[in-house]
Amino acid sequence: MQFGNVLRRSIVGMSLGCGCRTLEQLRRWFTPTEYATLRRFGYCAVKMEAGRILAESDIQCVFERAKPLREGVEPVELYPPNVVREPSRTHGTQQPKT
Image (cartoon, rainbow, N blue to C red; front, side, top):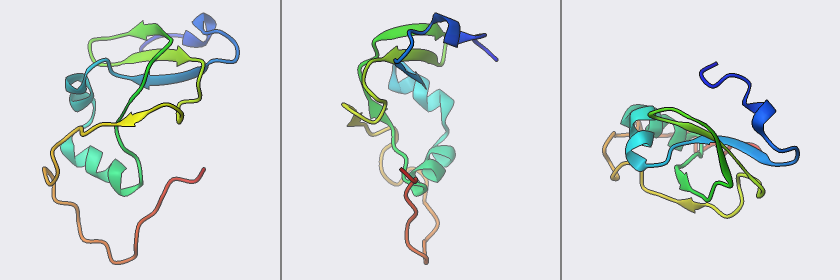
């Protein structure tokens, strides 16, 4: 594990997540093809406020915040539309289970 046991540094009850400080870092983490796959499964890149950074590398960080990770987020455009052509879908779309 790149950052060791970050749970020891976290506050009980906080939401933990992995992310990037910049869109450029996020583009280094996910290629256009990988991101297109995530989009097909209903995921998207978002911007959010992190309470505290627990660990960080040149690409990603582990953070904690008081709000759940789904709350108070703003979708962002990671790649311009149609950077990667997604295959045509004949069976509809699938959303992540909540």
